[in-house]
Length: 427
Ligand code: AMP
Ligand code: GLY
Image (cartoon, rainbow, N blue to C red; front, side, top):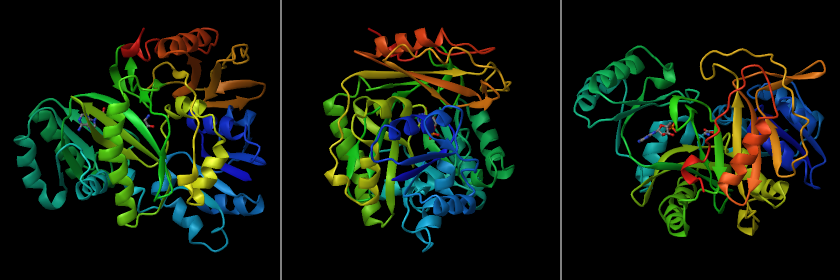
């Protein structure tokens, strides 16, 4: 099989690293990729949303499978673009149709889907220009804190948690009247705040059948102890210690099965991964959000724990044989610690030379790269999140300790990482 991965983050490096180990993979490409993917695949300089150029490349290089990493091409309809064109219809695209990708692309769509399918989630109302005044009243009378969500994709910035009504009303106005998050944010979901601990569940589906991948928990805040600004993710651990068999069973019965049944009943074509953000309130799971792809940095702990051939998983998805899959999962715990550029998630500099990447003498560690590129003989920083160092251990503490130790051997100017990933689960 010739495989093309789309994206350029640590998630795509982890996927390329895993797929490269499969005997079923002949040629592996990543568009556009990074310095890490260049070591296990061939990078192709095509943007993730340039469907015409991707199609041309796929035809001339006999690509059999396209694995889409980030949400943007999925929400923009890459699945339909390839499957409805007779020339490219034979290529397996791993991901949902554009309509089904709205589970991530539109918060209002996702909430209505959950309502129809009786999937537990926070109570909500949706507002736009047509019922703005009613929305103002609703926000004014809503219990605190109030969660405001821009309907469309907003690069992870579209969710605001407001702790007083003045702030909530001001933000509500900015979103709907001033297009704070662009046109897609002029529709707003106003949601009840749920108190609890979050985790991520990953579902492999062909739209009819499903299997679960290992679960994970990510750490979004920049500072130690989950403080400071939100980021794209500072680390992740897998498995999630508080997700015992009884809790997982509730997730399956109340959330995963009705989600898959909903896709099927509503004829939403979906051949890929569903990432369900779950919050545990007392002992009950609620959906915080759906994503139509794998998570980053969760993939950097989920994929390394999969012992089965990943290309077999991809072909089973495309051929609607997910019911035949029996995915073997390592008993080891995995943790990834993300090294970021100084200043991130605000302004930061790029182009810093990274040293110490050649330290590979630890068999239980893999260094995944995200914001990196090759510059002459060097690998240099090229983004906010730069590396995701994943380690295995008998438990989460051991795995985190090993990743932190490895990161202490790696250097670039103003490197920063959190040493306390998995702190709640410390032994
Ligand atoms: P989302 O982009 O929907 O994942 O939201 C970003 C983050 O906001 C989530 O990971 C949660 O930490 C938080 N969040 C979103 N919705 C709620 C809610 N209803 N209650 C509490 N926290 C929430
Ligand atoms: N780690 C969260 C995400 O990938 O959206």
